[in-house]
Image 1: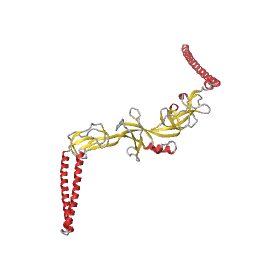
Image 2: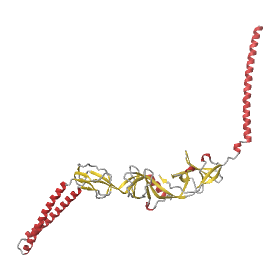
Image 3: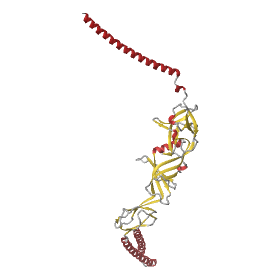
Length: 413
């Protein structure tokens, strides 16, 4: 019994010792965690008591450049893509049919009005002309006979030597002969024209196209196309603008935001595909009164002098209309505008010398300037540098004020 009790006592003592060690470890861990929390709370308390050094120190002012907004009158240019076209476009067809004997011109060359281009076999028309000349001679002979008969019967009728009927028949015969001679003259003239039409001439001065029919072909009168001729001096530039553009321009004109030249006398400029400007200026000579149902656009045409035939029909060009102006326009450099998810904003320097964010609405632009429709007013000092360092309310220091200068004419697109 004593041995068993000792064993049990030893086991109990060992178990109690293990529990004590575990409790001691837990207690030490809790004390360590408490110490850490106390240190953190003490640090926070000290920070809040002493204050954040960065919070107490005034933020250094950001050095910026500004431009002062001032209204000004600016030129406005309307631009569009256009295509050149001859001022006169002729499809050349023969007035008479027959065998095409030869081409009398160089395809693609410039020809003057009246230049022979094609020759049609004239033999059938020469024969027809000679036949009709013979008919005319016969009718003229009949007229002379009828005239003599009337002249012979007239005194006899006066002496009652012939009947009235015979005399009147002689008059009718002469008048009929006169009519037949006139008809024969017309037939001869028509034959002369048909013979002349075998020489197909250029009806206008211009640049010729390729020949559509080869020599030896049978040409149908007034049907078969022989070639095309384009008059390139002067030359047209066709372009269009959208219905939305028309409505916007009308609205801006009514609001006094846009002024068009008197009688729409725009100065028209052409820019070629390589970026060069065509040296001659043009003017509008057609503005359609209808909106094209298929495209929703209005067709416009300008005419340009082209004495050196620099421009050819079919060229794609950029058309620029000068002459419109915007009074009291507000322009800011593009560097002063930030584009974000909610639109465009600009920073201005307020009366307290701090940056103030302004949402703005911009219109057309060109080169380095935006036209500001709303959001800014005259006298605002718009910040143009260090925009990424700014926040609303941030102090700023103006180190340079950009000089006021007129921007290039914005283009309406």
